[in-house]
Length: 267
Length: 70
Image 1: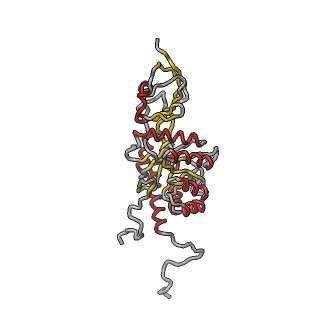
Image 2: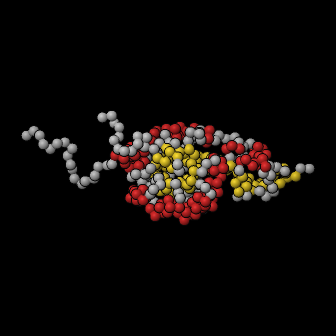
Image 3: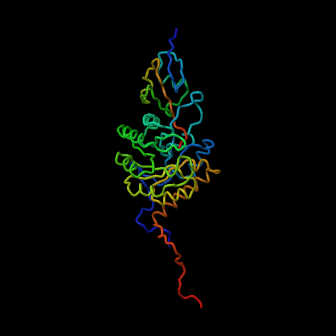
């Protein structure tokens, strides 16, 4: 026994999105940390290769303030600009055009949100924004509702990944919709990521056990008491969930089935 | 006497001496142009054209950068 998996899955078990290849199946946000130094340490501990970033106005009163790039090196991590805070298709498209100019690449995360308190994806506006972005040459990973029809439509339009929520953004409620997430995965030919809802390591493992290609999270790490340790936990959980998915779980049965031989017992 | 024009930068009105290019404005504000992106009147201004972009009265600029986000 050398511990080598025997399945046909390649040992590095990489996944691809928009022609880019990644080993880590954990994508992490860079928001909500105590400071940029903690952001950098937590992201390092997570093992993530892709990080989401927001696009915001520069503070003109403090142009020399430390920047994210000084702590999260864009040469080491793939920056995935998001449209967090955009409630219309127009704002989302404007934001990502600026992001492309600031960063120089086409791979982006689209999210168009409905109103508080749930910030649930506004799918009509999301379709509208996606259409405009695809025409403009973007490669778009799309945050979406846990709706297999909507997810399929995004894929058919040309999204490079679909990212249904497991629970509302920042709620930490865990995967509330495993049946619908599984339905989306079974229908999809592009990568499926759970984006939003993860609260702790077991949630991330569950998402991966359902067959997701990767998991995206921010608050679950940033708002943990010890973000660096939670980042490490999430790394392990995503890997464990992925292995469990590939290994194939045993069947469930509603009665005991002894693990030890029932013959040869002393009398 | 130097002419002044009013423009709007990130939602704030600003008087600048004219003529002025976008490159000169960014330098005056003190921004590292490699880390920002600029939208002028809803159109992206490519970084390579900052020096050739002369600002006009009433221009609305958005100057953005990447920050932490999820």
